[in-house]
Image (tube, rainbow, N blue to C red; front, side, top):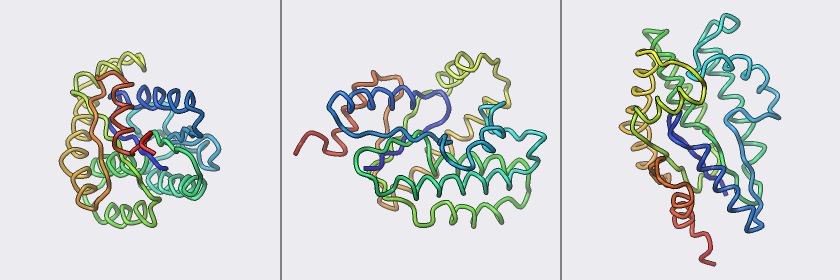
Amino acid sequence: MNIIFEGIDGVGKSTLINAMIKDLESKKELVRYIDELTQDSPISEILGKMLSDDPFFNLSNDFPTSIFESLLLAADLHYRQEKYKYNDGYNLYDRDFLSILSYQKEILKEDYSNYMDFYKPFKDIVMFNLKPIDLLVYVHAPIETSVSRVAQRDNIEFIDKQKKFLTTLKNSLENELIPNLEKDNIKVLKLDGRDKPLNNVNRIYGEIGYGKN
C-alpha cells in the first residue's frame, strides 16, 4: 500500500509519519519509510549536495540551472517508483511527486519567463506511469505555524522572500494541484498538522480501512 504525505515545510509531516510507523510496527505490520531523497538511490548523493544548504531548494554555485535540478529529481522519483511500487506492506512516502511539481514550478518561474514550455512536459514525465496511490495525505497548518517550526528546526531567521515562497507553495498546492488530483480520482485526505499525531493516524486508518478486516 502506497501512502504519500505532502505539505509545505513545517506542517508536521515527519511527526505524523513517525507516529504511524511506530503504531504499525507495534501491530507487527511491515512498514517502510521512503524519504523524498532516499538514501540508497544512485542519484541521492548529488541531490543531497545540491539541496543540503537550504530547505527551500535554492540553487548552489555547483548546479546553476533549475532545469538540471528538475530532471535529477524526476529521475530519482522514478527510481524509487521502480524499487517500491510492488512491495507488500505499507510504504509511507515523506513527500513525493507533488512536492517535486510544486517546488520546481515556483523555482522555474523565478528563473525563466518561458518556464511553462519546460514545466508542461516535465509534469508529464513526473506523472508518467505513476505508481498506484492508495491515499495522498495532505498535511496543512497556518503559514505562521510553518514559519515558526522551520525557523526553530533549522535555526534560521526567516526573510520575507522565504515566507513569500512558502505562502506561494501553500496556495499552489491547495488551490491548484490538490483539486486537480481529486478530479483525477486520487484519494486525498486533508489533515491539520497541529492536531495530535495519533488522532491523525486514526483518521488515515479510517480512510484506508485498516483494522476492518
